[in-house]
Image (cartoon, rainbow, N blue to C red; front, side):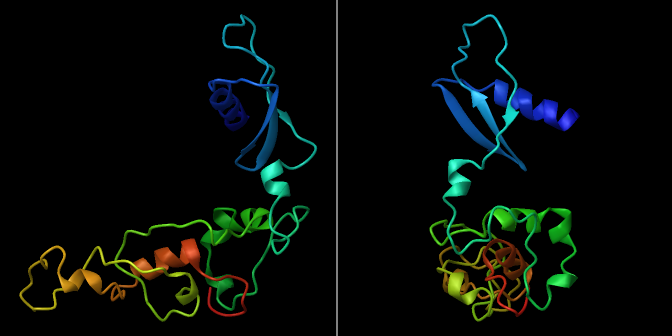
Length: 175
């Protein structure tokens, strides 16, 4: 397919050194013979599907779903209302990993609902990019003022975005 050819072209452009490297490319795990040198006149061999998962995936936490699963569907009460997850293949991604507390992500948005049951455990603090005008003047508050320190979301968009990134999942509530 055109998508596979495009992936191959992207991988072929890399400077390849060493003997063999496994790359995880979208849904496919491929192994590339990296003994090819860019000074060699022949083309490198095309990527071939690996019979085993990459070392990174094999080292996934034992709490994560097994790699043999094709998809993971969480038991969250509102999950069925989230049409976007099947569209972006979230259930397939969750079969590989559900993230790590070691990964820190910054969401630049309208704040976050501080007491949200699916987010409270994963919010580390911050400030509000879109502060409320607390004076009622209709003007943007002065940068660095207390209006920016209150990052409780009054618009909902930041909470929604943070939920995509960091909500506790598969806990039989919410999304």
